[in-house]
Every structure is written in C-alpha cells, then in structure tokens.
Image (tube, rainbow, N blue to C red):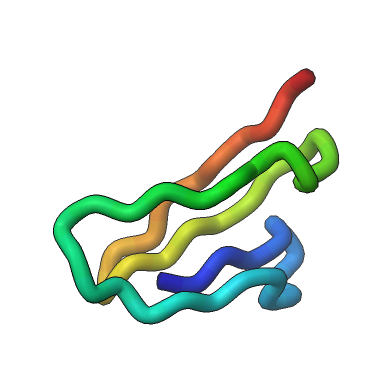
Length: 48
C-alpha cells in the first residue's frame, strides 16, 4: 500500500500482510490524497 499527496509525492508506504489494516490519519492535513493498493488507486479526501 502506498499513499501519495494528490500531486504525486509519496508520503506513506507499508507492506500489507493481513486482510485488514489500520493506520492513523490524524497527522494528515486537509486535502486530497491517493491510496494505491495493488493495482487499484482510490482518492481519499481529508476534511476536518
């Protein structure tokens, strides 16, 4: 799994070894992010 800022800079990377995984998003600032897991990419929007 890789997470990017919407403009492409990698901010987080992890190897997924389970079907479920949790991570803390509290440190992220408001904005758009891209979350890539395997070959799928999803948009993540953080609003506070």
